Image (tube, rainbow, N blue to C red; front, side, top):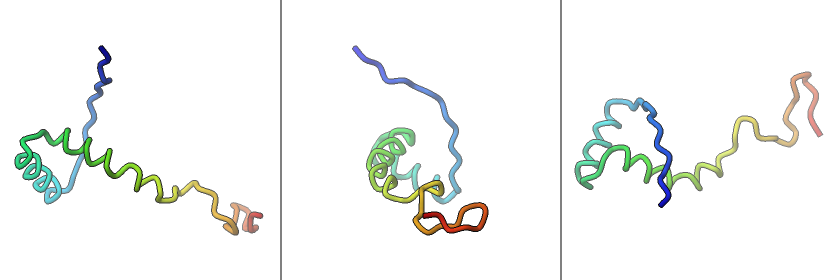
Length: 69
């Protein structure tokens, strides 16, 4: 039997968002943790489509002001 790794992590949400999370968790009779995990699984693929600040951008200027080729 395989057990999932469990780690504790504190997350901070704006008050209004936390209230919405609490209401949705109550509606689904689930924990906020479960709700956040499901939201991450659903959103992960879409979030990977957003470029990172470290992604290479053609024509972007390097630190010395020269355009990279």
